[in-house]
Image (cartoon, rainbow, N blue to C red; front, top):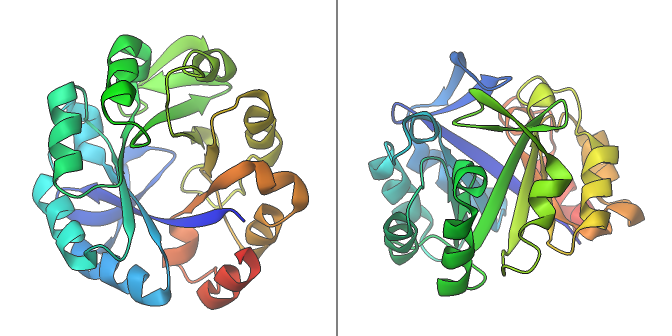
Length: 243
């Protein structure tokens, strides 16, 4: 069955959630990301989705100390994936050596697809591609820039590269509890052979039940942020449903 990935989005060392990807519309949920990671682990989660928001905009890792603290806090109990500002093979290697289960490459998947292919070759099973879309078109540089590339074209470009997953985010739903764009996400998962993780908009237990539906079995899982932090998800019941 699909997994539920709690999201820890890092801005200036704090655990935040953005509204529609706008850095100036951040709600701080915890000023101790490591404590938040431990809380998710203690609730029974086996995976964590971490994003360095500052890094995504600046093109380099900015919240590295917070990520290291998260990794130290959960030890080997939780598989942690990280995206945001990872733009070189050296950065990929460094982060994986520090204990991440996998890295997520977003902007470079558009700018330098050759780098993604090389990373996937060097670190099999440990490189994912983040595809963030607004109106069906891929956005880059922390969602600040739009491209003319459509989601399916980009996803298909990596089908033979050994990429372990695609994290597909509908920016127009992110952080506003609008519900996941299930039709587009499931369609993408049925179109490509790479496992797809849904992101953006998970709002309630209805989305958890939708994730457990038979046609969503093609997904690796879904990411939840604000709905978890606001208590809209009954964690024990959600994990029971997904088991």
